[in-house]
Length: 195
Length: 317
Image: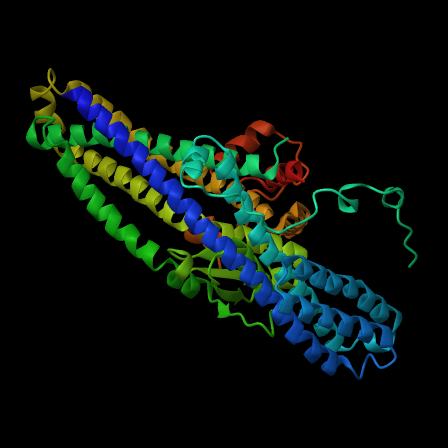
């Protein structure tokens, strides 16, 4: 009789474990989907925001056609990415935004007249914020995917995952080889900063 | 060298260990103190649980109110005003972004007009949480540093530290109450019962009184140790959110160099803040001095020393 009770208890514990792993994997998989939608959501916000900012900063940036062109290009890429729904294109689009920031900074520093203009500080702030938002929404996707995939490969949760046929999530697809993993000659030299 | 994930795991393990040991210690202390109380009142050790029940109810009720209304109470005490996106852009959007990364709901944001550099989070659960910073902090930290501080506060919310510390406070409260009762009873009844129970309950009486003397102090020391452990944990979680230890490190350095005490803080709310508002841990940023004295002073702090926190963060980067 006690042996049966013990076996029963063990069975209950094992079943409870399986249920908790199953629920964990299922809910994280749903949250991964949601976080992908969130990236799209933030990129859409970015695409809507940039024309507004362009409009309000126009007067101050009259002579800076280059920056205008960059902003317009970035917006086009974002629009295309949102339409296609392809995660890789999302990533490229918001990289463009991040590249514009230092260029505006240079214009501001070299032009004492517009340096004091609040509207440009605001433009910088908003641009940084919007690219941060995209970055953090991607971070969520990366973290969730890691949590999920770790359960799929570690013991004993991998047994439960195999039993119910959970597949590894791809997450934010980044090429696993290429330039971003290697350090080039130019990266090793100390950058020259002239002030 | 620990990477951020190992550091988080280690923190979680140590935290759990301290809490388990604390609970065990509280159980043993309560058992002896309640037994001694029982001997005094009924003459045998048969009724210790009754006292535990009464202690639990009293301590639980008083702490429950401060736990449940923690956000409102602290806002009233510290005279904070709500923050908005226009006036506090970096603060507001920083919280927005880190909430996005951590999956927490957006807390309510407040600002205290004070030149001291500090921040705190409160609230019983993420849905009722608040994050509050001083205007000094907003003006002196840049966005990256501010994100480090915000990440730290959001981690307190996400880890349910308010709840944990409330539970710990209830346990410390029970011990203190029971010990207090034992002293009062033994004061009134010392003669008679001692003679009757020398053989049967004598050992319980002695142990109970010893426990009553030392355990409130020990329990409070462990409570402070848990508080410090949670600070390390929040630092590590903050880095996991922002992936920029440098931001939090330079924020800690700036804050530790600022020598102004926060006027809105008092002893009761000290443990809530980002860094100790009373500067107990401020002096030696580059510490040499007498380690023994530092260690002893550290035992009575709600926060670990800033140097220690920076050292741990530097290992992560």
